[in-house]
Image 1 (cartoon, helix red, strand yellow):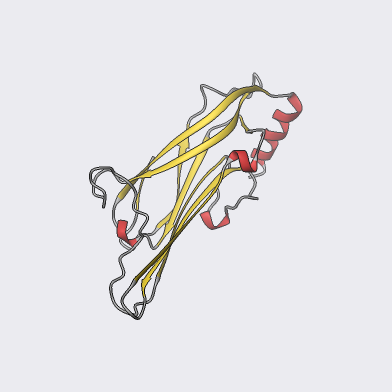
Image 2 (spheres, rainbow, N blue to C red):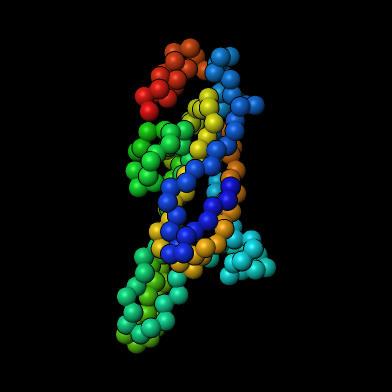
Length: 184
């Protein structure tokens, strides 16, 4: 999946779709129990790390003594429901398999010393759905960002890995999953 930041390092909510049609069949009551989802952000072409393509943990460079710090964030999540805005997505949101947040706080103190704190929060299917999250449809991967200005106008790639196993779903459970999808 690829996405781009705008000139300020922002990215409004954007979705990519993972086609699972060769693994699921609601008519035959065949689904997938997704056990784990992994995301890896990469900046392979114009990044800070040109040899490795690593996504920078630093969202901005602050150099002026006493400058106001910058708060920046990136959010990635997997879901079967399209939320209008990533701000609506949390670990208790319906149909959410996992949520990853990366937050950077940086600035310069009054003596000119740089200060950087980064925080990463990961809540995966093993945390939110220990027995696996059963799907019978495609999976959506959402992304949004605020103030990640180091990567302004850059295109970033997200590698996504799923660990899942096929499951046979009872008629009652398939009806419940399909009726929930109609409640959107």
